[in-house]
Figure 1 (cartoon, rainbow, N blue to C red):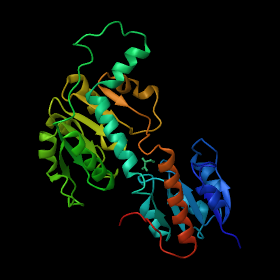
Figure 2 (figure 1 turned 90 degrees about the vertical axis):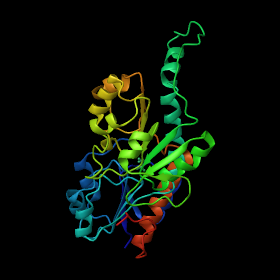
Figure 3 (figure 1 turned 60 degrees about the vertical axis):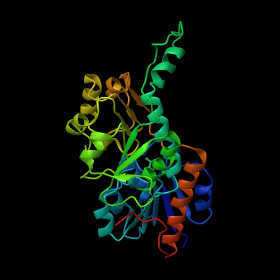
Figure 4 (figure 1 turned 135 degrees about the horizontal axis):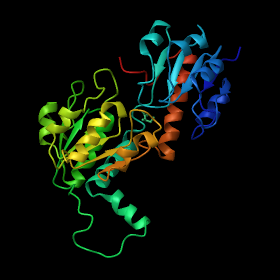
Length: 320
Ligand code: DGY
């Protein structure tokens, strides 16, 4: 009998979903909106695989609603903080994600945020858009240089390494801190977190959100940074204490910040203060958002699904 698979979104970039539909009985969730937990549970009943996004909640209730025939939850994302891994393991469900294919694209965005935040490009563009650019003056829009700085990477996995590869072109020296992945590429100098925070002009975060990394950067860590430092976060919002960051920006404890992620997403009026902060550049979680990369993420997620449903090992299971 044909296996049934749920895709929590009815449409995804690239050809991956159509490829999947040609091989399984595909149940499509809503085209755009994130389905509620109750809607997901109803759609998942009886499926052997679930293809979902990083912001879908994969908990025991969803796994149980699917049933004991469920073999795989395949995330079209590198992050996996929405998954109850213990519940999946208890039920013998394989969980896969899509690391690697988004590393270069996300690294490009990290450098965009570094440049935007240090050179205050968001505020400069806003002035132009508001029709408020009245004259050229040497003292307008003064930012801080990027070349000649020291960049501290917290987490040195595939994205951190891709960020480090770009640093040489900017004349930026790289420090890195990662208890699980030693720098073996000659591009970064290992440092403990304290040293990295104290010495870096730019601190960029590349760790998954776990109980250990939640609020990893809080008031104490922000105080440990240089007053002229920039904090960049493209990992998960929960890694930074947003209230402490707002206070630090207002007090001038650090120079600026670039955020692509928030503790709760999507965000609106509830973070208006943070987003309106002149020295913060904020984007709506677009780190991997290119046509090629989002298509590659879906393709890899589909490959993982088809492999596991065919009784083969997954290409990219979650790390142990
Ligand atoms: C990821 O892959 O984790 C990115 O944040 C996009 O979801």
